[in-house]
Image (cartoon, one colour):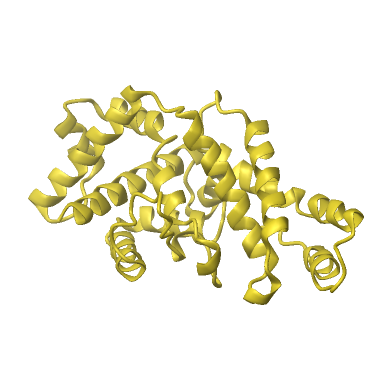
Length: 261
């Protein structure tokens, strides 16, 4: 799959940062232009999980601000690739923008919470992940209504996981997404340390039903789109989106339970 990991990134960053002289403004502009595809790529992945009222251009604008912030604050002596650092700043700026918008209606948050509770209750009772029919019955709705509910809540079920994937600049290391967890002071999961949260999340992912676990892995680690995952698993894009929503709701429920213990 084509991803925006262009070799010219390295050429521009070397030309811009590896010098004793003050950076050339022209090279700075070239660097911003070189990383524009990365901004669009990150924005597209986030936008695919968001409702239409969240403007794509707003994500792009915040991403550019994040890139400029990365250029201004990058420290070559930290032995971290600029591209890795830039991804952190770009995604972080976009997530900050989404948090500030408060775009999720309370009714949708309530529905997501109800789904989480249903998953947890059934799993506790049966000792295994809840099946679709069981969850629908627990909620007192038809299977069709249950699938519609998953579609309604898909816009918020990825946010906490994206936040978990945000690394602080001094914690950046090889790997991305769910492989590295933020310990930022504003992170709601900062109550436990980095090692514990990584172990908790890994165990929670391992406990997911096979297809949901594959969906999470392909989306967050391999960075495939929902459509591409559907092609791999031979499901429709809509079905993959629903599996992603279920996986995120299960993970949210497990993490909340662990944090409350």
